[in-house]
Structure formats: C-alpha cells, structure tokens
Amino acid sequence: MILRVWRTKIDPARLEEYWRFERERCLPMLHKQPGLLGVLFLREAEDQAASITIWEDRGTVEALESSPSYRRTVRKLAESGLLVREQSVEIFEVAGGALRLEALAGRWAPETTDPRTRQAHGEG
Image (cartoon, helix red, strand yellow):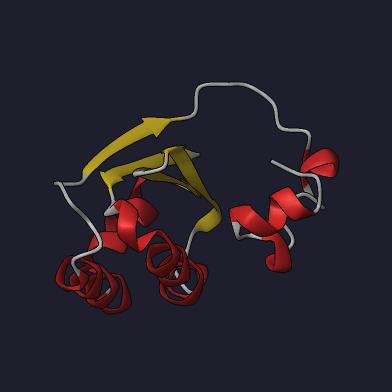
C-alpha cells in the first residue's frame, strides 16, 4: 500500500471556492482512478491544504500521473488561481500500522466531507 501526500498553500480569500473544487472536481476524479483505496483532504492552517491518497501499489500511483482526467483536473486547478505557491508531493510505502475501519466508516460520509459540515455534526 502506498500513501501519496500532496501539499500546497491556497489563497485564504478563496477558501470556499477551493473547498468546492475539492468536492466537485477532485473527489469525483479520484474515485474514477484504478487502485485508489481512499482520500483525505487536510487543513493545516487557514491557507494550508494537503491531501493524502491511499493506493494499492506504486504502479497505480504512477498511472495517476498519466490519467487524462487527473491531468485535466491539475490543469484546471493551476489555471484557477486558487493556489498561491508551488505544490509538493511525497510518496510513502506503508510499512505497518493499523486502521480502525469500523470507527472511520461513518466519520466521512459524502455529506460530511466539507470541514464546516463536520464541525456542525460535532466532528473534526
């Protein structure tokens, strides 16, 4: 299993627009990618964003880079002006650990992927 960590800084005046881009463009595109096991969108600070995608193996991560839908989404994001610095990507092979899937299962239902919604439900 492979974790791909993407980081960037976003325009703080356009947070709502960025969150909408995550939900409406990134998430559907990622769900179509072969080998994707999961995705988490992260906030480090108001203007810092990251995502962790979980993949079956290194080959599926490499295939992402050549995916036409991924390339279109990346191009749209770059053209949007939502990002205010370069992005970085790190790739990690999972060496061990554990996930409590039953505990996670209900935490990020589709209607609670927006951080403001999770807070309204007492999450996050």
